[in-house]
View 1 (spheres, protein in one colour):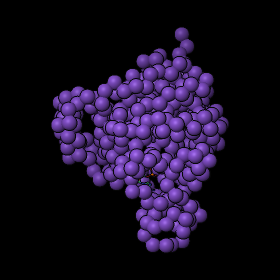
View 2 (view 1 turned 90 degrees about the vertical axis):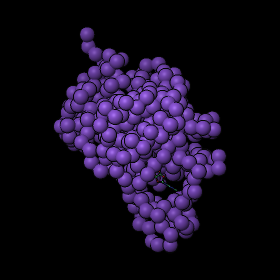
View 3 (view 1 turned 45 degrees about the vertical axis):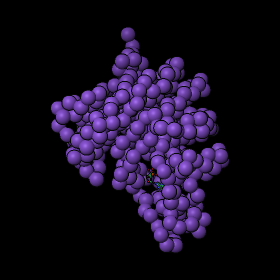
View 4 (view 1 turned 180 degrees about the vertical axis):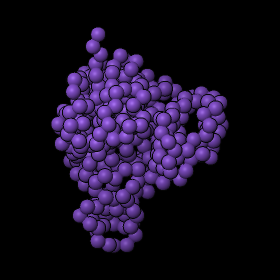
Length: 341
Ligand code: AMP
């Protein structure tokens, strides 16, 4: 029997978790990654090569039923060459922060004031327009200065909390949304997600992400990061892929973001996105406690990505479903002792 083959540009932990979800659906995987020790190599065939290497892309896509990607800086021409899903247009609009903010504006999705420092006022955050992630390429600005054409200024938002919402759209245009998530970042890196977020404006968040999905003719999972300012939502950015703030869905939702991404791009019916408890997801960053200690935590699901620890690197995560607050506090304290930043 010939198994359906999913090809993926990028073989990091997101690719690995897509593979883990897809194996139980009887799918086969192939990944493209420059590293011969890419985490996803454990769950599929690995093509070692650069992401924009034409020959490597051709080998990746040969015989594949669908090609997807697991990071948002895939070159638009590469995504177009292999007919990737989500559509290359989502990459194109998301890769330039100015274009992304203008898209929000066009869709009447509120976001922080942006433009020049004269337009945003001070204090502001100046971000590089392209290739920024995890808070890299951005700085706080308290006095008027000349920002370059490669940078975008944004009003510094005094948010109460950071939220995100994940949505999925299938080839037939069917959409589903997971409950809004509350996220805690430190040093620009996601540390903890809690889902569902308490008192979240679910309907409004769904409305915003739904507009994006329809505008982009989107297929697959999308994530929208939001600031909550006194109950008012401001969009920060979207990611056209499965997302760290959706890892809790593996055990905490009826259908995980990874499974629904695969269902969507393969034209299969979408699964239910409801939460099956209260989840807390804690990232393992730069280092991790011995696995025995993690496994001793009640109600913990431990995910290790098979990556060598390095400062600031996400090497795994732990999700606790319906754990007591003391257990959550114990887990956070344990993980923090071994984390950096
Ligand atoms: P980003 O790279 O845009 O995802 O930003 C990384 C983090 O920086 C966000 O998760 C926020 O914590 C913070 N941040 C980004 N933009 C703003 C803003 N306009 N005002 C306040 N904080 C921000």
